[in-house]
Length: 202
Image (cartoon, rainbow, N blue to C red):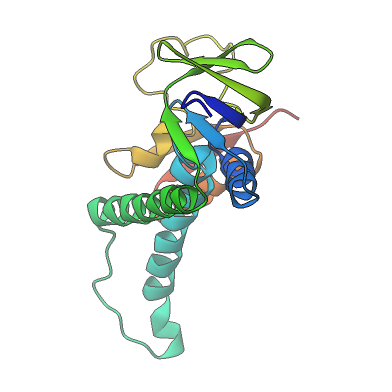
């Protein structure tokens, strides 16, 4: 069989894509997993996992601050934002490495680059064309910026990816959107000392 022909090509290495590739690999199929940016997808790299890691740090900080009511003296408690960010990055790096190892064990070929579906069973990545009997599209989504005045080229504005890596905890923060993602960030930053306002349509 050709090095560029596969039983299945999976476009997108998020939770849907990398699990599909792994299971097909274990079933004996020759599989290529194509990913433009993050092995593990948004959730693992700039979504659920880093957010929950930072929230866990904030929770530990709050517990330590309030420990005296339970008879535990934890005076001088402070947030080390740089260390909290380093721990988040370490957790993400370890989990991404785990996904890569799982794919290798399943015999999956990981191809880094943006895949283009040129025709049925024909995918081009960085100038190389691959063919397959089947293609799975698991490309996920990305944040959408609302068409609000003042949002274009505004250095004070970040999306859900950028807010995970702010250089410091802001003293004030406005969050547009009161869904689960907005509320999680509101909880995180308010616990760490930010004055947070959530803006949501009625």
